[in-house]
Image (cartoon, rainbow, N blue to C red; front, side, top):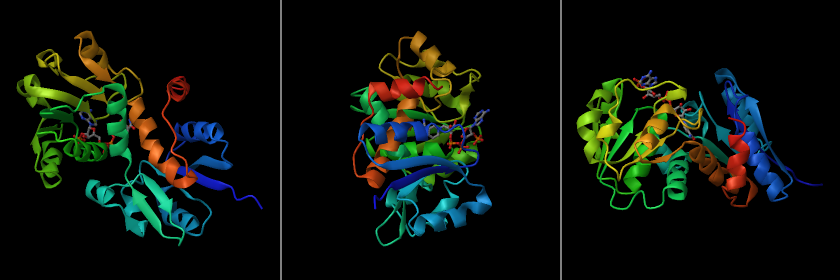
Length: 276
Ligand code: NAP
């Protein structure tokens, strides 16, 4: 009997996920007899679905909105980094049936910048992170790993930025209107808010106060060139879009489920870009 390894992405809703196309491309490229499917799982169905994983129906899968936090309680083991971030986006079934939860968003963030702005982290001093949601937590942990000196977390709701003090002692919380005075000292600006989706824009973000050695990256990738990236590009700054983060976060999961480390190639990127 041929044993076909199966993986999934679960979310609610899930039909717009690009993950099946990413993993499907890698399965074909490596001639792996396996599958990766998007499955809509409502919050009340999550425990039963994880039970199916535990029973061996799948090798593992990805978890997206709204399950990234709730799935924690259903894992048997949680990777220390995922524990610290407070969310898991990748589940791997161990040979003994235990479910291990990981967070690969932080690897996706680093892999994207390493590939598309090599040297971005050399002597990384001050960084501005816009937003204080789940993705921002993964990114602050990643930035700490690359020795960011000070991480200014600026958020619409200031109290949520203040909660980041418990995550990292490098964080200085603030509100988005504090961007201007901080901008001249920043080597990197990361947008982790949902502003940019469908062309929405920040009000009064004085990008012209950034200096020429600053890189601007957005984790929103619909559209690929958000208004923030377009404005930064027009000022001659280095910019990195968010699609690479999505592609790179998929690498560790594929390797864990199917046993091959896949590559993020220009051809894969072009294929996904064509669907945006
Ligand atoms: P989240 O936990 O819901 O956080 C949303 C953040 O956006 C909060 O900081 C929120 O501020 C802010 N925000 C929302 N609307 C705003 C507005 N009108 N003005 C100012 N701030 C606003 O979401 P998340 O999981 O961190 O994801 C954030 C974005 O990143 C989403 O668009 C998601 O699709 C994208 N993402 C991309 C990748 C990738 O692979 N490229 C990975 C993960 C996430 P408040 O606290 O004030 O509400």
